[in-house]
Length: 168
Image 1 (cartoon, rainbow, N blue to C red):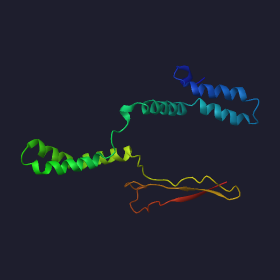
Image 2 (image 1 turned 30 degrees about the horizontal axis):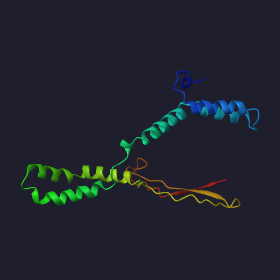
Image 3 (image 1 turned 120 degrees about the horizontal axis):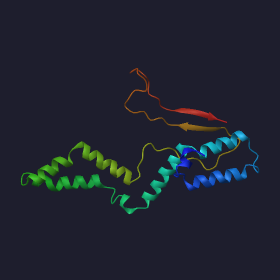
Image 4 (image 1 turned 90 degrees about the vertical axis):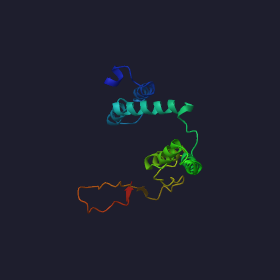
């Protein structure tokens, strides 16, 4: 019994999986090493934490307050800028709002909100083909995305474009 199981925060689904694994141990043609690996995995703190985060996301996803009301907040901000532009000399509030809506940080926040609301995530990975010929070799195409920071201490390092990894 692990510390996670002992303190009462053990997820019931992981407990059922572990119990089913123990019950089927005699019926499955697997080695003790394989069963030990699965047992350790099902009792690990890392998997428990992942399941806990997953359950929290699922629970919060059902709550309507976490869904975006619209996905065009940047467009609305631009329309507001057009409307208040003729009025910035008439009111200090209009001028303040105009300057606020032009700030790059606020525009970046609105763009990020719209990207999440539209589920427009980067990078887009290619779809996995449904039909695969079993006689063909399987390869995985890996895309590495590099930030502005160098990969090593040397500034002259070449950026990584991609790699092909052969699997058996």
